[in-house]
Image 1 (cartoon, one colour):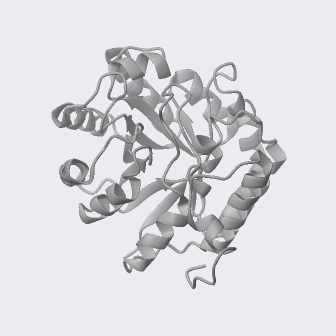
Image 2 (image 1 turned 60 degrees about the vertical axis):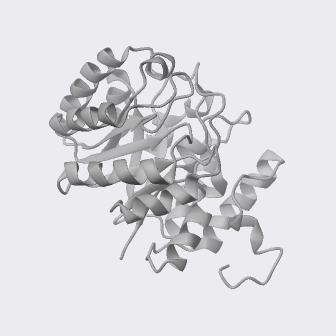
Amino acid sequence: MKIVLEEQGLRDGFQTLDKVVPTETKLRYIDMLVEAGLKRIQVASFVHPKYVPQMADADELCRQLKPQEGVIYSGLVLNLKGVERGLDSGLKHLACSISASDTHSQKNARMTLDEAKSNFKEMVKVSKAAGITVRGGIQCAFGCRFEGKIAPEHVLDMVDHHLDSGIDELALADSTGMGNPKDLGELMEKVVARAKGIPVVLHLHNTENKGYANLVAAVMAGVKIFDTAFGGLGGCPFIKSATGNIATEDTVNVLEQMGYDTGIDIKKVAGISKEMEQFLGNSLPGQLYDLGDKTDIKRI
């Protein structure tokens, strides 16, 4: 069975870095990711550069993208201004995302949850009118560092809200890494059933070292698309304790050992992670990207 990974390193992976990654380097990494077999790449978020300086080049970056057959380039948007910028940049796939947590919503998007839900419907409407494929996201679906546990019933209500808005894909995010395999698996099984064939995506952070266990639980629950970031980069500027995403290399490794096909070359992705390690001057959270230099392990 095929499992699809969406690379988030260019967006989620870079958004909290202190050192700005040049546009030309980002474009080169995108080409390398496509060469490695990634078919979905989130390249940027359309947010205010004052708050997320790494995304200041989002518009220019998207305009310079080289179309590749079968490859989806997407951008994250949190409000209507972001949608407008995404449309102007030429992207055909936008991820419209809001938080399940009212407190996080106010910190991340400067909107109450009710305001964000209303704004979400308008974002989807405008995007769909322009012929854009829309991924509807729910952040902090498995816990919030400000509010604690998020009730599954509340998340399912938001799932219904998103589906009623006319989205093409549904994505849930463990933004804080608080999810556990048992509860996450049970909720994702309900979400997949509720989606009734609409693709369901899961975005996992490894903050509490449960990301890969949660990955396996979600696969067992029927999820077939996951967000990952090369080298395990990632984090949220508005959640201080949020650490990296599950690493692309590590995720490919565990999935393929379980017999799933990803179509992704670990060694080629690892090359990007190693270069990023040198650029930053410190090691990355992922494990597999560095393993090939230390052992003759056949996975690499």
